[in-house]
Image 1: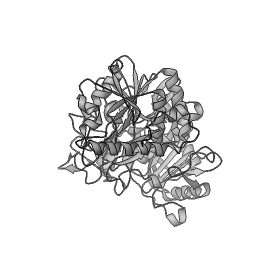
Image 2: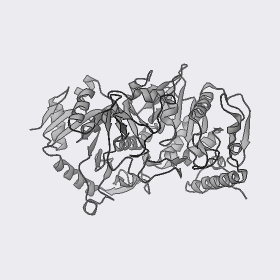
Image 3: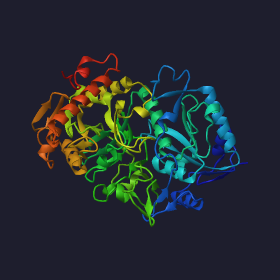
Image 4: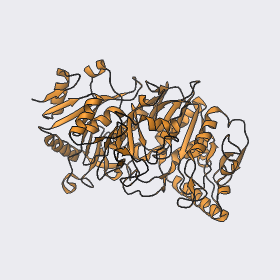
Length: 534
């Protein structure tokens, strides 16, 4: 019979294990942080570094593997999922076979279980169970998802189960996968299977995708964004793909953090999906990002950060550009717990333009916001996915296409309704390159991006003059407090003005070509994007 160790061991949990039909030797359920860390070190899964946090290496895979992620194709998903290059179909019978093989694989082994929630709003949260074969991954789950109270743990009934077994690998020619690793989401069985990769971000992003599928049915807008709240209870949202600045710009000492990556927008306001943060560490400095720097302490998990004499070297990228730290939300001073907020007054779309031609900040009309949300232009930055070695321009609809199972129009419709109802003001902020494209120009300084965001949040941009950029169809402020005026017009920062014009026209045309994939778009939205040039 399976032995269970943990703060809450009851017949209900034993019954759930039997119903799931796994027979491990010992299950460690919801262990305390110090016990998880101690066990991980004893099992040589990681080491304690000079900050007191746990350092781990994820091996071969240091980022997400989007080509190995599948959704089971069945009656529930056939007509609701946006099938294609991002959402890959997987046969239900193949899923069942892999599930049975994984259950057999863990027979007689030690497993770690985290029971908790996705969603800080108790009316809309999802009860989950995460099953791991590595201790540090269970610590990751504990720090990233929402931790239950003692009473909630005693009565926990998981709605979805994530079975993440790093040591189990698929046989592609037998199992129907693309490689020996896999991320399989079954929305009917309510099970996620992950194998062959130790990159912990696959767990959190799988649950994000599930929330993105479920919530639109409840008229709740799921968002790939960070959120914070000011002293006047003014909530702000920051949309953007990995590396665009969601975590950095929302960790503001003058505002309280709601969350750094995944949220829902219900009729009651904003709520965080997570109980922690998963911040990038590459080139991290105490001066530029003090909140993140100070959150790296006992209980946090450092992924793939090089240690020199036991001390993290955040500038060393020899393992990956995608170095990460996972820590609970309360490691950020003044974080909002439970992590909920009101309806947002300001929305910021973040893009990292590797072509260096977009203005660092512009104000969008309602229709322009819809256009840029559906476009989701940015650059994939090095290390966030396998094979990405340098910035690559990409259009990721909804600023999170890899995590959005439904068509973009489903999410865009809800966003439009929310903006209309709450009169939210939307800005497009470019945190990418200035003075030239990647390799020639330089990334816009964080302090300038912070100053622009601060001006947007405080209303400092409400009563200043704007000039219209005809090519990109954007309204650009002529001045922003604490930002050099010359960088507000990106052309001014290029030494070769003709090269700027060519690059700008090229990007504008890329927008136009990308938007052709959206059918039956309202003319007012279509006309809010870049204009064709002769």
